[in-house]
Length: 415
Image (tube, rainbow, N blue to C red):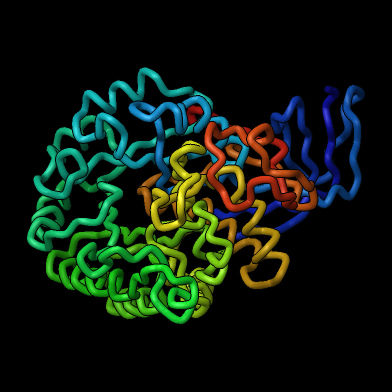
């Protein structure tokens, strides 16, 4: 494939808040040069007015790996390839593998077995076995180099949360908490409301999130320890975070890409790939999350890529394990359904998928010279097991045509 010179491509730099047009030189999918008025090499083809997007690499705050322990769902190799195909140059993995990353030896295993194609980061477990009962050896995990601490599961003991915040603050790593009261949730599988009654499915009320969220915010105020709030999914949750930020509490917050795109009305299909935890919100929840992204109350969009095998997901909706894949789908669908409809500005979306997640992780923002992707928002493709890099295909968009695809990714490993 000859070199390609893309003329007048739209450049989105989340770091510099820059939205301008430039020329880009590509070679076999690698970005060689970015500037105005590039001269075309003799061995390059020139594409004018491409309609393409050049942007800083994307950063995922939290996703799940199958390997080790669940390689039938996802291997590290397939996970990394899916992330690159989706435009991600940084990927942070939750510790809920088998074994759980609650010991430095597990982190050493990851480093020895992970592909070097992108920047892979690891959350260390807050509690042993990510079981929520006993504090993990946070000091040893911090010394080993985890990016932060998160179980990826809700902690049900407020006293343990308090102790974790008091002790964990000494290590200057992000602490991420998912506010969810399992007792209040009972057997709910969709957001409680008119739709849950019409669907005939057990409802999960908003207070499942907001009651423990209010408690965590009180603990943050008492301890002064910075906290990242994961998987915000309710309108009331956005309100509580807005009030806490107005008071100056040291918090950041994220929602997942599917909670921005969909609400409980999508569950009318009973597609088990829409069984999520937290469940998709009501329409007012979805609207509040989008408004929270635009106002900055919600700092970042997480992918929460959660692979499952066909056999695991092909069950009745209420019996399906919660979660869906998303690394290859998030940018195309967020762009086509929210940016092109003027619900979220392009630069805001890019910031919430790139520099803001990096900030929440305590990492430098992606290098606008060394970590870049080329995105074609008009390229149509059909989501199939063959077109996905992920080993799993548990997504409601399976076998559907969507618009938008990343066509080149450039990652500087020492950036």
